Amino acid sequence: MAFKKQINWDMVELYVKSGCSQIKIAKSLCMDEETLRVQAREKYKMDWSSFSAALRSEGELLLEAQLLY
Picture 1: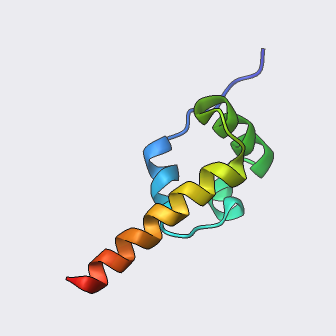
Picture 2: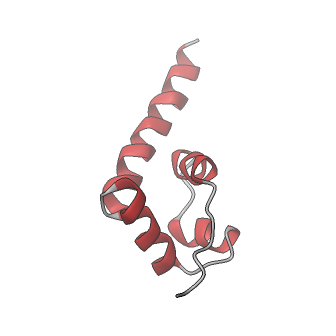
């Protein structure tokens, strides 16, 4: 059985909300993009594009809210 790298998902979510690309996130975790996609699918039960789109929208909303105050 292959070793499964532990991922700090709070950091991944923060990176995605901040607009980081999947490639940059994977490199920061010392893994390839496919491994990140597979583990995200296992954890969140959705593909990377759906996962990242939802979080990017949330990040954009947070930025817009900061501009209002």
